Length: 170
Image 1 (tube, helix red, strand yellow):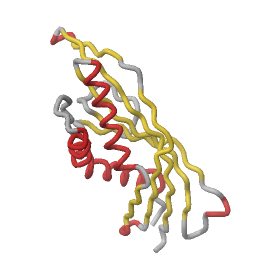
Image 2 (image 1 turned 90 degrees about the vertical axis):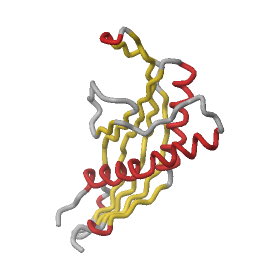
Image 3 (image 1 turned 180 degrees about the horizontal axis):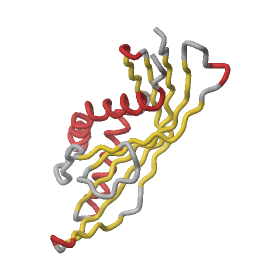
Image 4 (image 1 turned 30 degrees about the vertical axis):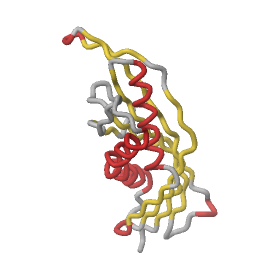
């Protein structure tokens, strides 16, 4: 079996998000005890950062880089540190509701990803995920010519550090 590296790392983290995002969004909404902001599950998921047309909310998970220290890699195992970026893009007609929605997506994704351990015994991979930092985008406008209206968009982006342990030969 060949090493899985970034592909399996991205796939396992994306599966973790998909499996838990609806529950975590519901938890955040319940914790805030506020029904003004409608939190819906993502409608689109992407593994590249160049998507131009998509339904919102959308989740992006992009692998940036990996480091494999010489002394921590052998013929039958890989011990790597990878850097990924995960972002959620949300949309609303009002700037205040949009900001709250983005902050709540931040809380939900943080709960899913920070200090998360993911295992895949069938491919002998174990991941440990840590949120290193997050950044909010400015609010921007997306016009819809056919509907003669504009919505506001905002993005929350996380930088993730992932410890990737793999034994492809067993």
